[in-house]
Amino acid sequence: MRARTFTESGRRAQIVTAAIEVIAEVGYAKASFSRIAKHAGLSSTGMISYHFAGKDDLLAACVAEIEKVTGAFMQPHIDAAEGHIAQLRAYVESNIALVGEHPAEVRALIDIVKNAGSQSAAVNGRLAMVEEHLRTGQAAGVFRPLDTRTTAIAFISGLDAVVVRATAAAPEPTELARIGRELADLYVRATAADPEGESA
View 1 (cartoon, helix red, strand yellow):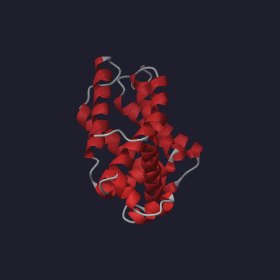
View 2 (cartoon, rainbow, N blue to C red; view 1 turned 180 degrees about the vertical axis):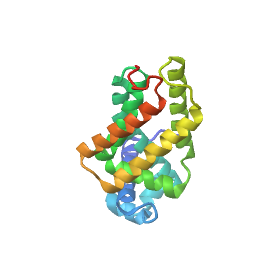
View 3 (cartoon, helix red, strand yellow; view 1 turned 45 degrees about the vertical axis):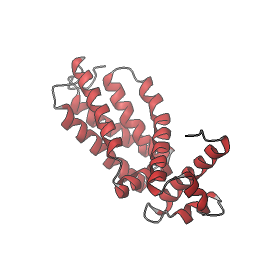
View 4 (cartoon, rainbow, N blue to C red; view 1 turned 90 degrees about the horizontal axis):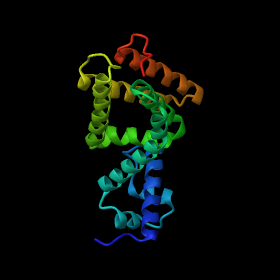
């Protein structure tokens, strides 16, 4: 398989960006190739078909791009936090803050997952990550004895539900910060071995 040229890579990125913006604006169901092509300033839908095998292929590229954007925003916050509990808090707070920083990407991802139903691998990846964090925290003595799988499912499900509501309401950054702190407080108190949640 030949490598893509710089121009081809740029065109693919342009199409992916346009698709994310269209899905965020009108929803997955109405995000036709013709609408995406018009938004991207392309002369025809043929350019999309040239770069992507079909809508599923384009959606997979959109999800990959959104994950790259969200990771670039959230990871520095998580990396700067010291200790399991601080990292848990940073994950929650940065995930909620993401709604204000990258609203189009968050709206598009929510709609893709809800309608395409093909992103279970991404969800399972997040569950595995949280479960592993809980296990290593238990080994370090900072998380209480709990079923890590059940807790990870509740953690991700609750966080995603709050993100969906926040995305629909589009609150101010200060309100998003408050929501993030309160949700993080809830998770810290639910999992910490120390009742006050002060362990590192």
